[in-house]
Length: 406
Image 1 (tube, one colour):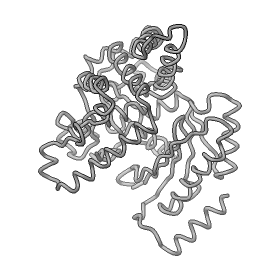
Image 2 (cartoon, rainbow, N blue to C red; image 1 turned 90 degrees about the vertical axis):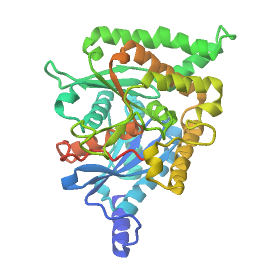
Image 3 (tube, rainbow, N blue to C red; image 1 turned 120 degrees about the horizontal axis):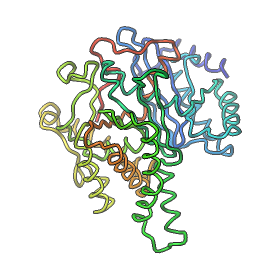
Image 4 (cartoon, rainbow, N blue to C red; image 1 turned 30 degrees about the horizontal axis):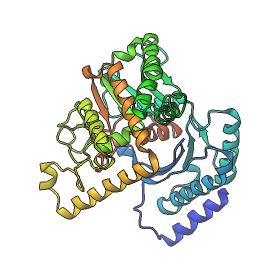
C-alpha cells in the first residue's frame, strides 16, 4: 500500500499537474470520529509556524460497526489519495487519528486498528478522552499569553460524551481533565425520545428533554464541581464540539458587531486579522435560537432572516455584492448540511439545552464565553506539533489559526 502512494506521488511530481500551490512542508491528518471522517492538511511554514492549509470535504459516515468498515475505509482512502496527489503530502507524513468515543470497546478498537492499517498502510493513533481534551485545550489557547491560559476551561460537547480540560495551577499533572460520559447531544436526545415512547406516551419531547437534563446532566455537573471546585473559578469558558459549530453557524453568522479578535497577545489592536470568537451575549444568542426554533424550523435555519444573512457595515463597505452573495451561499450550504446530515431538530434542541445547563451550573453570567466554528479542528495543530516534536508557541503576532471565513 505504501508503494502505491509513493508511485502516485512520484507520478504527479513529474507531471507537476496540480492547481494547489506548493506548501512548505505539508502534513495530513485524517480523523475518524463518531459522526464523520475529516481530513486536514497542516503546513509547517517554519517562521510562520504550523497552520491549517486545507480542510478536505467532510465524509458524513463513521465506522460504527465492523459491517460498514469497508465502505468507510474506501472513503478514507480517497482522502489519502487527495493529500498525496493534490497537496504533495508524503505518505509517511499522514497521521490517522481515531476518537475515543468511536473506539470505546477493546474488541472494536482492535478491529478498527487492523482494518485501517491494512487498507491505508498507516498505523492509527487511538486517542484517550483525556488526550483529546488536552489537545483541544492546547489548540484553543495557543494564541494566548501564558497568564491568560490559566483563566481558561475548555468544554468539548460531543455527540456521546462531554469532556473538558483546564490547567492545574496547583502542581502536577499540568492538565486536569474531566468527563461526563453518555451525556452528549445525541445520547440525551435519544433518551428524551425514548421517554416519550415509554410508560408516559403522552409526554412531550420538550418535557422529556427537561427531565433528562434535570435528572441526569445537572447532577453530573454538580458532582464534578464538588470534586473539582477549581472548575467553577475560571474566567473564560471555551466551548467546542459539533453543537458549538452549529450554534455559531446559526447565530446570525454575518453579524460580527459584537465580536473581537483573539490573537497571540489577546489585544484586538495587535492583529486585525486575528482568530475571531464571539464573547459575551451568550445567553441572549441562546435565547434567540430557542425562540426561533419554537417559531418554526425555517426560522431556526434562517439566521439572517428569511432568505438572507447579516453583514456588518464594514463588510458591506469593503466587499461587492457578488462576494457577499458567495459568502451567503456558503453559509446556506453549511446550514443545509447541518440540518440534513449532522443533527436533526431534536438533537439541536438537546444541544441547546446542554449549553443552557452548562451556562447556569457554571455561573457563566460571570465569565467570558467563547465559541467558534473552528471548534471541530482546534486539536490538529497541537497534535501535529507533538508528532513532529515541535514546541507549540505563537510566532510573533501571527495567530496559530487563520481568520474565520464566514
